[in-house]
Image (cartoon, rainbow, N blue to C red; front, top):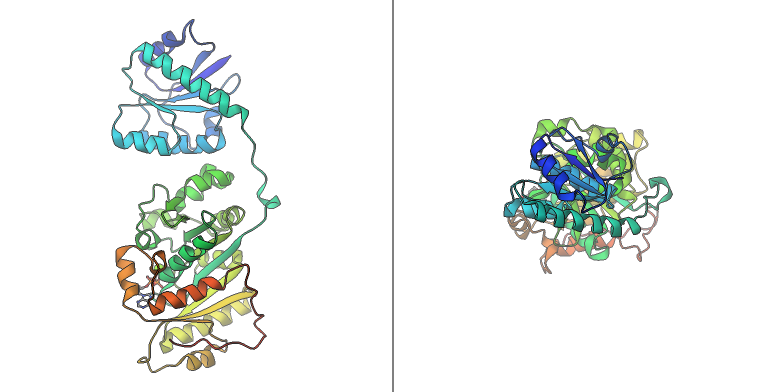
Length: 400
Ligand SMILES: Nc1ncnc2c1ncn2[C@@H]1O[C@H](COP(=O)(O)OP(=O)(O)OP(=O)(O)O)[C@@H](O)[C@H]1O
Ligand SMILES: [Mg+2]
């Protein structure tokens, strides 16, 4: 019976672990002599010769970031295995280890008594977790949430602002069951407008274990104080470039199986990632500013999507940054795009202020006119509200 799996190339430490358990704890140690960790638990556990271990010791010598990443995946896929990180302790590492589900931090030079106590504790935790373990259901058999893509042909018209506020507003309706996904993969700024410092990003979410297991994907999301989750973009545009449309489609399907609302912020135009989002969307928020090129661009976008048969049934047309000095009226916009406008968000100083502060307007109660309009947009997704079909008489949206 092998209860301990050790990943290290430090043979001295291996001997000390052996002597800590010898004659005192049942079971034996199997060592993988490598400090280069694999991406997934499966790749590591393939090397186990007998039954699955109860306790996995990572280090000494493994890179702490790799250990934390693998531990997060073990925490979701194999909660019945206790993970111990063997490394020099420091408060930052201890906090990150706790978040990754690591059971204990063991200093490489710890004496054998302390090692034994820790290993025993880890075995007990593993046994009690093993009793409560339930395997995951396939995605296809689970109900699907509402997937809302926010798009516009032009940049800078307020997609990120609208998407972030929509997510915060929906989070009040469905706390911890709303996620915002930043699909402006190269220059996304959802993390900035929500004031988040993500530990994991889109690249982690579409590859490796996260792509195979929705609970791992969920562990890679960032949690926001307004009870919503966020999936932010990688720091480097080059890394973001490697993400394919197929990976995005699969990830959105996974999220829709887990969340009531998936709000997607997109890059301007109809790039491959945005098309993948539109394909997955149950609802699209089409956005335009109150300027002739922007409105004409929206008309073209609607035409192209109609030709591609990608216009979803639930469309929400939003005019943002509306004011009375642009020379265009809401009626002019409707005449150009040949579609009614559903929500008009006025230009307001409170919006850039909230962007710069990293707190979307709807995060706090606000009497601002833009907040009122944004709440109106959120209300369109309230399941208790029955949406009029688009053929019904449309109540004209007005600039407040
Ligand atoms: N209703 C509004 N009134 C005033 N300013 C606004 C309004 N909506 C958005 N803004 C401001 O406009 C700027 C651009 O908004 P945002 O980043 O949301 O646009 P975007 O469409 O996501 O841009 P990009 O295409 O570059 O991603 C931000 O500084 C934001 O605060
Ligand atoms: Mg944006």
